[in-house]
Length: 116
Length: 110
Image (cartoon, rainbow over all chains, first blue to last red; front, top):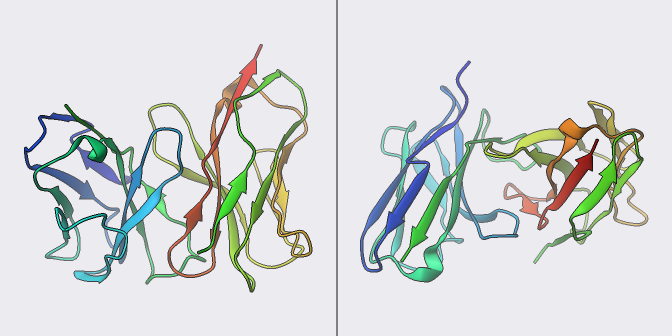
C-alpha cells in the first residue's frame, strides 16, 4: 500500500514569504506527527494530532508555525514570514494507533525547505 | 528532558566487517527503544525495536539488546554490505513523543 507522502519535496522561499507543507498519511492512521530535522541532527518534535485534534504543539518554535488536520487525514504545516533559521527538512510521520511511543511511526520522505 | 546519545559518524567500513553503533539514553523507567534507518532520498523506517529490559530486537542481520543496567541499546551487525550504507537513528519512547539521537552515517566500501 501507499506510504506517507509529502509535498513539495523541495521548497525554496525568500525570507518573509509564507509556505505550506503538505502531508498525506497512511490511510486510516490515527496519529500524525510533524518533526523538524536540521542538518546533521535527529528529528525534533513539532506537533502531534490524534485524528483531527491537535493534542500537543509544544514543539512549535514560534507563533509563525501553524499546523492543521481538519478532517483527520491530510495535514498541512504552515510557516508564516519565513526566516533563515527555518531552513530544515520537515518530516511527517503517522501511526495506526493513538499516541504512544511504543508504536512504530511511518515516516514520509520529508520536505527540504531552504529560506534565502 | 530525555535525551539519546549515539556515536558520531561517519563510520566507514569495508564490506563484511563487523559493525557496532553505540547508543545510550537517559529516560527513566522502561521506555521502548528503537533503531530507525534512513537510506538516501527516503524517509526514516523502523529497523528494529525492543520494549523491555533484556529484549533483543533483530532484523535484516542487525540486532540490539535493551540493557537497562547501562541504559544502552547498541546496534550490531556481523557482516555489513554496501547496501547497508545509510544513516542510523537511535530513539527512545518513554512517552508518546519519541526522542531521537543525532544519527550515525554508515559508509560501506566494496
